[in-house]
Picture 1 (cartoon, rainbow, N blue to C red):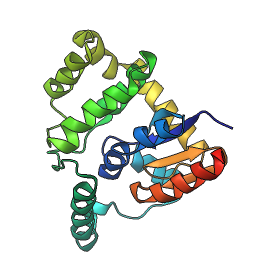
Picture 2: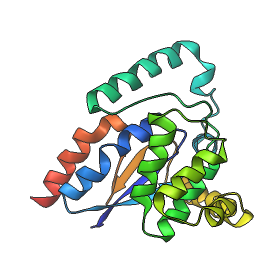
Picture 3: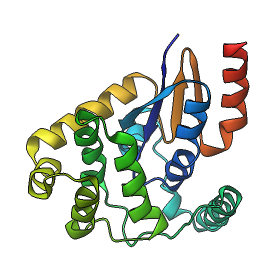
Picture 4: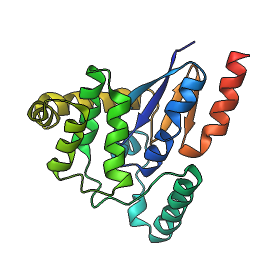
Length: 198
């Protein structure tokens, strides 16, 4: 059995943000870690054969979805503010940098706070630089990495690996032979964890 819950997520996903407000605490409660696996939702959908429009192109869906996000944020008692852009690839690449430093949870917390709690503009590298400063990293080194061919190529490879694992969207959590999609699956995850430790 695995000692880590694989967490496939995209910084552009508010539901991934919501899931992350709950996942680390739940994992620790059952003696598990979280394996942070960034990916990009649009190519994951296409790789899975889902060629439908994005949520933003379906007005009725986006209206209800936004209401649900606000309900979940209130339910979890966490802040929520829609960001000024959903162009987040450098922030996703930053997860790989954070993984190398064994600081992924702290980075994801800080990044999600900027994007989905404060509603920043993710295309502003100054916002991402503030996260690097908060992490105590060399800011120039970090920003160079997330914009580099090396970092972007590594992220694309991570996306391909996610597709191979059957990831078609985010958030998806995997443990042993089980997978759960969405921040609204935590009662099922906990049911499995209880059975796993009994």
